[in-house]
Amino acid sequence: MGRNQSGIRTRQRIIDATRALLAESGLDGTTLAAICDRAEIRAGSFYNLFDSKEDAVLLVVREAIDAVDPDPAHVGTDTVADLIGAYIKFVTGEPAIARIYLQVAVNGGMSDKPIHDRVIAHHQRRLERFRDAALRADPTADPERVTLDTEILLATLHGLAFRSLLDDEFDFSGTASELIT
Amino acid sequence: MGRNQSGIRTRQRIIDATRALLAESGLDGTTLAAICDRAEIRAGSFYNLFDSKEDAVLLVVREAIDAVDPDPAHVGTDTVADLIGAYIKFVTGEPAIARIYLQVAVNGGMSDKPIHDRVIAHHQRRLERFRDAALRADPTADPERVTLDTEILLATLHGLAFRSLLDDEFDFSGTASELIT
DNA sequence: ACGCTTATTGAGCGACCCCTCAAGTTTTGA
DNA sequence: TCAAAACTTGAGGGGTCGCTCAATAAGCGT
Image 1 (spheres, rainbow over the protein chains, first blue to last red):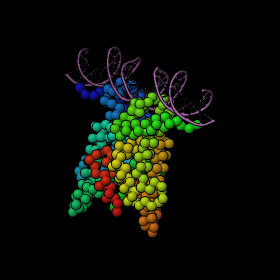
Image 2 (image 1 turned 120 degrees about the vertical axis):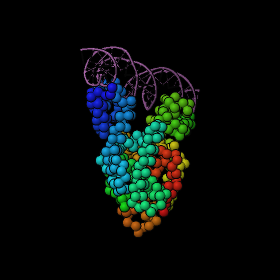
Image 3 (image 1 turned 90 degrees about the horizontal axis):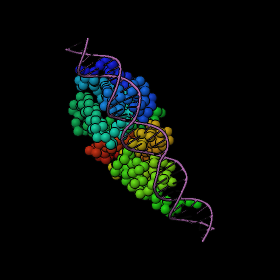
Image 4 (image 1 turned 45 degrees about the vertical axis):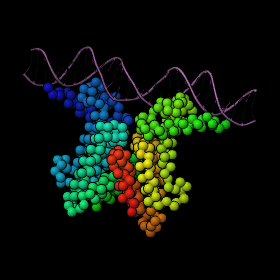
C-alpha cells in the first residue's frame, strides 16, 4: 500500500508551512513546534511523514534551487551567462531561502558528515556545469585553465551572494552582472 | 579597585581553553561546560570575568585576526599583495578559527543585530584598506572603479576561503595567489 | 592586621529543543 | 464490507544549554 490522500495533503501543508517559516523567521525560528502549529498538526503526524525536521528544511531548499535551473533536463544547452543568471535569480528572487542554504552549508558542512558530503557534491555538479558550458563556448580553450577560472568565478559568485545576504544594501545583481563577459 | 592577579590568570586560562576547544571541537563543541572543564573552574567564575560565552569566543577570533595584520599600527604602508597575503595566512594558518569566524558571521549576522553590525563594519574597514592600497599603487585610477573591483576581489577571497574551509582538499593558497597581479 | 573588593564554588533554575509512542480514527483496496 | 494500512492525536520523555546566586574564600591597599 502506498500513501493516503490525507497524508499527501498533510505533507504538502508541512512543506508550505516550513517554507513560509523559513522566509519569515529564519532557520532558528523554524522549530518543529512552529511548523506543526502553522500546518495545524501534531508532532507525531510530522514524524509519520518525515524522518527529521532537517529533512523538511532540506527539501524546501532543494525545491527552490531546482526551480531556477535553466536546464532542468540537463540537455547541455545552457550557457555560462544562463547559469550566472540562474544564480542571480535564486539569490535575488529567494533571498530568504538562499540565506537558509548558506546557514545549512556552513553549519552542517562543518560538523555533519552527510550534509558536508551533499554540499561538496552539489558544488562539484555546479562546477562541472559551468565548466562544460564554458568549454562549449570555446572548445579550443585549455580545460585545465577553464576549470581554474570556473572555480574562481564560482567563488566570486558565492562571495558576492554571501555579502548581499548579510547586507541588504548591497547591489548583488548589479555587481554579479559584471562577471558576465 | 582593579582586577586581582588571580582573576587575570583565570581569564587567560578561559581564553586558552576557549581557543583550544574551538580548534578541536568547533563552535558546537565549545559549550560553557566544556570551557569551564578545561579551564578547571566553575561557571560562576566564568561569569565573574565575561558577560557571556559569546564574548569569550569573539575575543579569541578577534585576537587571531589581529595577529596576522600586516600593518597593525595602520600607518598605511601595506600593499594589496600584503593584504591578500595576510588573508591567505589567516585562512591557511588558522583554519579552525577561520571556520569559527565564518560560522559566527553567518549565524549571528543573520539574526543577531549587534553581531550583524560588527560583521558589516569589519567588512567595511577591510574594503577600505584594500581600496586605499590599490589607490596608492595607482593614484590615477578611477576611485569608483577601484572600489567595485575591490569589492569583487574580496568576494572572490571570501568565496575561495568558504570553499577551502568546507573542503580540505581544496588548494586555497594556490588559487588565491592567482589573484595577486 | 583589617576591611573592602574580588574571586570561587556548589547547587540548580528555567527555557527550549527534537523526538517518541500507545491508543484511537480514517482511508484504502480487494 | 471489512481488515489491513495509513494517519492523527495527546501526553510526555530525555536531553542540552546558557546562565544565576547566595555563601564562602582569597587577595589587596592602607
